[in-house]
Length: 149
Image 1 (cartoon, rainbow, N blue to C red):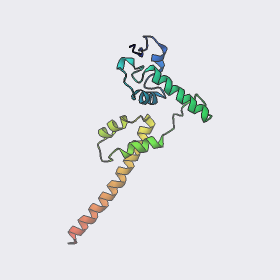
Image 2: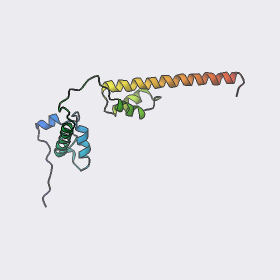
Image 3: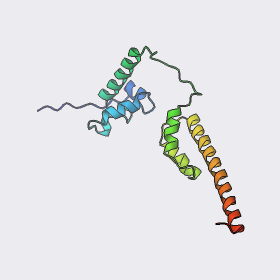
């Protein structure tokens, strides 16, 4: 019984250059490809097999056509994805060390500007919590000094 195999991209294949983890539909292609088994050698750009890349790109184009979106959009470098930043913040503890926060933020596909925004918001949370802790500590100290409960 013949087995259909997906041939890996040939060396020098232009798709290897274009289809990398940095491609706009790489995440979708990887999700599609994860639904079936592929050996790492079959993955173009270490992301997905050729068929899954093609399916992801085709679906992206169909969605753009259905919604009358332009196919090529120049990204705005000052754009901050608020939803991505909020998702990152929900998973972080503001009292964590800077190194731990930096490590956690690298797990999210955030731009440098979005990582900066997440750090800024975490600092605001820390400041607000610090003021409350300080006020509560002063109130508790005053109660203890005054013989209060």
